[in-house]
Image 1 (cartoon, protein in one colour):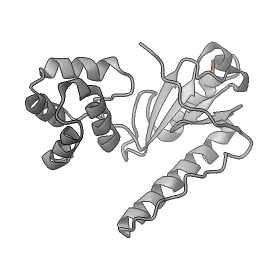
Image 2 (cartoon, protein in one colour; image 1 turned 135 degrees about the vertical axis):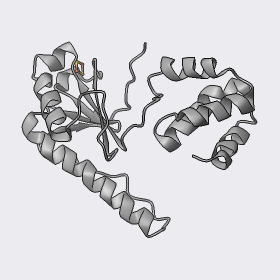
Image 3 (cartoon, helix red, strand yellow; image 1 turned 180 degrees about the vertical axis):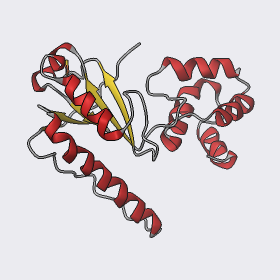
Length: 190
Ligand code: FES
């Protein structure tokens, strides 16, 4: 994100210090994380201390100071999911993606996170990708799940390469054999 783009975000919020959370959210949305040089620029332009911005960046789980993948995979390891084999899902994903939970693949396609209770215990074990819930998951369904989101990423690259403004359909089909639940992502508080 260059200075011009950051300035556009700052202007959107009238360079108001009290809008710092919204400003950080917009930067996070654009970059998928909060780069240090951008935070320094924002601190300078809004006359806010860098330490305060870092405090906010680490306080809210929605923010990340490390680059994140295009697709965020959350595996629930809460009690209800744990007793139904959530650990096997984490193992399988870590093996397939060649990262540990908390990490991001080298190509920045996926980030993998383990979380405590996603609020759909009856459907456990539960995996949520980009806010889309998949219940009753098993290791044998992981291939289909990853392929589905890999295809979505490839499609997006093709679309942007053509420089079209065509919006991709948000409608996606559920992974074979899983229960798809329409639900907003529940974030853990700290
Ligand atoms: S314990 Fe997994 S959704 Fe509640």
